[in-house]
Length: 231
Image 1 (cartoon, rainbow, N blue to C red):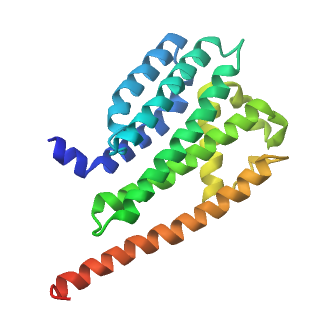
Image 2 (tube, rainbow, N blue to C red):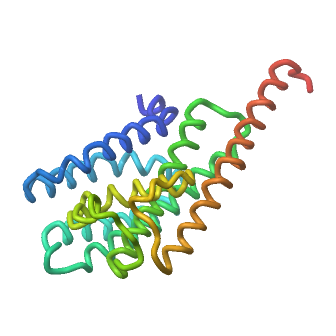
Image 3 (cartoon, rainbow, N blue to C red):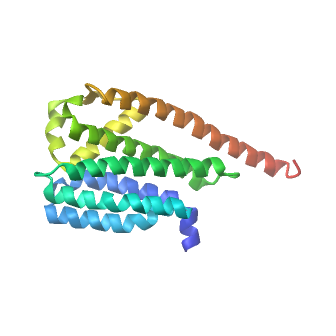
């Protein structure tokens, strides 16, 4: 069973990411105690799954070192959100670092592969979405520190007062930026958001070009090896 999970770890992580993305905006109507309990349960359930990404001891040590204060900052902000922003600042700052680290590990594994599996393709997609969430946390951090750095339409602006909706909306803004789509409901209005936006746009195009080329190259190499095993 454990071996089967390891072979399809990225599929499990992608499913968990999609579920979290659907549930987070829905949690706005939940009472505070329910949010804290739900957040704790999600954290406890997902951490062992997430740590499957980090196969080396040093990687797992650094991941756990970052996860502990992220979890604590999340709880602090849930309880003291109206009186203290330090929880949000620590959460978004460390979450950006942690998620960027996870993306780097996923990409490292992909480029070390000699053969490509279906789960590796899913892992590339998961890494792409994870990178968007990392940038989403960076945008949310900038918003906490310099809210005037964004221009936000009125129909969206009032929703940023809620902690969960704010995270969801900046993840949404990040996806729109990463894919260079952009709807215009949230737009950059000053530094350092301008720099983050162009960096993410370039990263998104580079990721697609390089990672897809790597996957196609591995697939072609496998096909050649199967047709000509003596080659």
